[in-house]
Length: 197
View 1 (cartoon, rainbow, N blue to C red):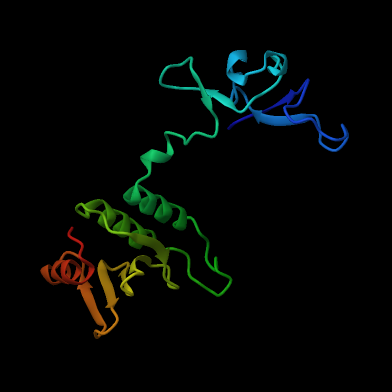
View 2: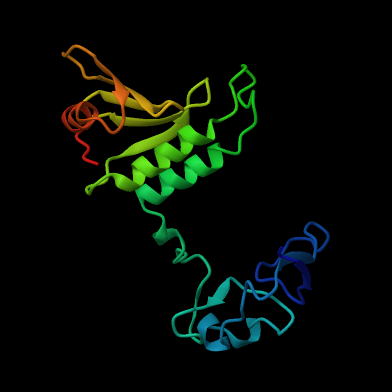
């Protein structure tokens, strides 16, 4: 999809102790790095030439002002907890059978799709959780509160049922099995996972 383009450097920003230690050719995507204006470097004689790259990129908002390439990307801000969990499930769905080298089954697409739909239906505030798979390929959402020792998991079976387990220090563990759309499931998840959907 992206072609790597070869760029050569006429002078490096770091003076190497010997010219043969590092290669003088580097690879990057076309226009991934843009040249800063000479005054932003502070020393015009060390300014990069037109054939070199620099750790600067053009700010997409203004189109002209250079910003350091180390600034956080605006794309990463789009992935909040909900989107991160959904993306993780989409990646997990692609795993083959025996992906853990211990005989795990391939992910069940219906289970994963149900988990993604559940993630979409959770009301705010979105809880801290993780996406994973069970050995039988079922999607699992794990909830964990390390400060209180709280742990719960919500397993989505391919028949539309869920299994939910919750434990907390000093209390008995609780377990629920039934239909995701039942009032009992909603009450259990609200009461023990503090999550409303």
